[in-house]
Amino acid sequence: IQNLEDKVGKRRLVTEQNLRDQRKNSASMLMAYVLARRNQAHDWFNGVVIDGSRTLEIHHIFPKEVLKEKYDLKLDSRTVDQVANLVFLSKKANLRIRSQSPGLYLPNINVECLRDQYVPLDSELWNLEQFEEFVKKRREALAIAINHLLDYLSEGKSVWVVGSLEMLESRVDRS
Image (cartoon, rainbow, N blue to C red; front, side, top):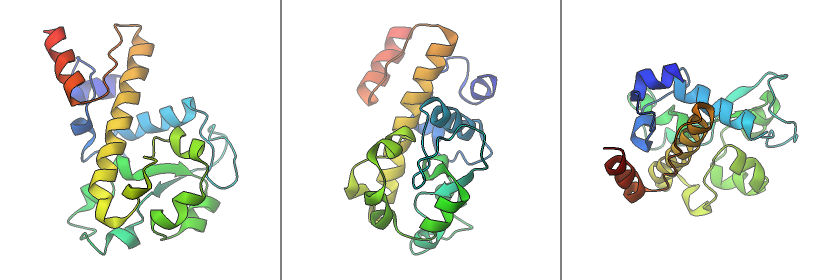
């Protein structure tokens, strides 16, 4: 919580914008892991619960091989390697996916497994042309989940923000 407060301030309202440019070594990635564990997320292929007892790998939902068609992997590393493009999987699952486009492999994943790690379920977003919208939707879902968890842990007033209008209203209400 302290690491997040250092990033977003004492207000603790994490926004989609706060998650932009956050990568694997950030407090946001740690929160994504905590959320996956809290949801008892399962590995996408072997069904094993992600519970900290097994070695995990960080998987790019849109693999770098796919993204290099549109992005310079070095210059655009903040976009390519952002938290919203990363999930936790076993090494075996990560190797099985390799460099497949999400449109090819995500339809074969159990919907609950995707939900548990806040992967947008709209298959229209699972192609390279929709990458920016995909990661925006995932950042929004992660921000909402992080806020719910922080409210629960702090036993403070719950802020149930679901969209831009609600976020604006919650800021006005808090003033």
